[in-house]
Image (cartoon, rainbow, N blue to C red):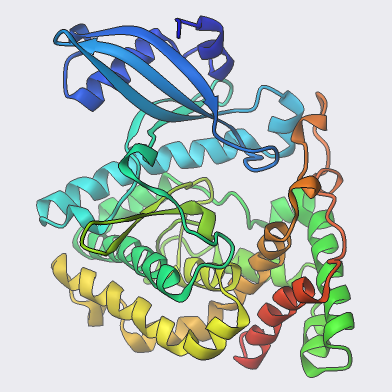
Length: 423
């Protein structure tokens, strides 16, 4: 263990020993003058291809506070050193969004919950330090693993009980927004305006996503041809013009100040939820990763969570009940926070939006379901990108799905959307 300044500089020239002192002081509730940094060490937090928008490191800081040795563990996300990768994945844009979420929104929501004695309704890692300039960005977050938080046991397809816990955590997250918006309407507009749409925009379709989206459609069409040939669902899916489904999502993601728009997590699939078991047998869920955060209907988060994280038997048996579980939990927390759930998001309004917007989850799942089925030897080494921006379709070189079982995982999602008349 040592003071490896080069390791700090590899994150950002603004990530310094002074940053570490500030972080330890914040965690220990001391002034920076009361903290002495003794050493730090780095470990890798993300596997190859896992975190394409950023570089993720785990850092262990050893310090001295009041004569006592303390250990502080953090996760630091930073812009990739590879400039071509930054440009290819528009990393700076995603970073700005996530930092603004933690600094502008999460901090306000935590104070709001504390004022209502409901702090346990929203579990997020603490943001301990950050720098934002589009060139040397980093965000230092609490490492929650020492508190017992880790991935759910089956990340891509949680069990029913695990999924219900994640679903309720998302409902509580949306409920905080609904209540805060109801009680602080003008300030909520300011919070929403601190975010920007990072994934579903007309200009991004043309300049960034078009070729890759076409490839995803081809993979889905191949799966439908092999598993559902000649069916109504195949005919309906193929009736959409190239880009039409993406542009539906563009419209859904462009309703920032609509009556039912609240802060969305944006990338709501299972790996972005960590869980821990409590001594009383209950499970706590913590949310991560807000690089795609937006202000929109909560159905966008809900539909993507449902389609990216459940398999056909669970949906067939529980789908309608899961919608009710979500809405009941949202209503319960809105009420606890002092607003009227019937007024802010009634069951009728919710179900109308389910019918209108649930297709978003299917469209986004065309990407996530394919990614979730990649084997470790199929993951993408992003550092093959050199200094220049390349088309993401040249990096995310996804192939047609090889096995019937995996193809059905994708066609089952499309079939469900068709059967429910969302598609």
